[in-house]
Length: 298
Image (cartoon, rainbow, N blue to C red):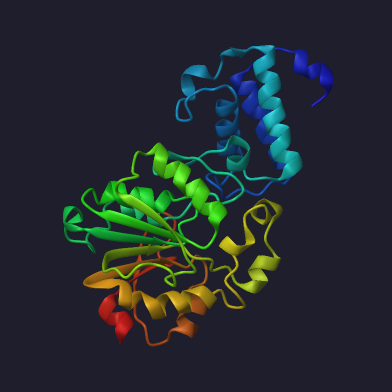
């Protein structure tokens, strides 16, 4: 935006319109909390103005102070020039209405497993109150582990990640939610250094992006940690290890809920003998699967 424009008076509506035009012209890619230019513009404008992220209507025609508009315009320009996900610019992400601290040490929280946890994984978990021990494998920011602790109020939750940097972010979120007594973080290469336990529920959003898809990632996704995305030639490198070890850590009636994104064909090729339940979310019906301990043992 021309320097002189920064001295003009704008409404919230003006700033959103400008952001949408700027994002479209720059051909930005979305998928880190919003999937279109308008929603991302609204989010960044409201954040820059220190307004609630879910309250737009009363403020649309409010005039913005010059220093406020300058702050918002800088945020819009950062998004365009850096191609960073908005969450890295604002240091926050929302999942099922819950706010989490994030930065570039972790992938931006967006797992649809969160939607299933909001319903306590019912009907696959008969009684959420009866769940006593939960594991979140490949926890990253800790968002799914925290949502699991909220979904299963009587459960102890363990969360694992290989990245010490990711665990530092997760610890900040665990502290923010006051869950230190119920949620334990473990540095481990998958199950390798995890103490022996029997989990009623294991949730896992592992690195699963196949090699050709990794090579074609838009710039926004290349800002995320490579180790949190790359799953090898067919995306199944870590999935194979997880499925092999998981039965030893599941209770007799335990279930594994696993996200594999757009890799269903690779999953079925790698595990032709498995017949998982494919769990439906608002976004898809073929990206998350559920397996019982008995299925994994067979």
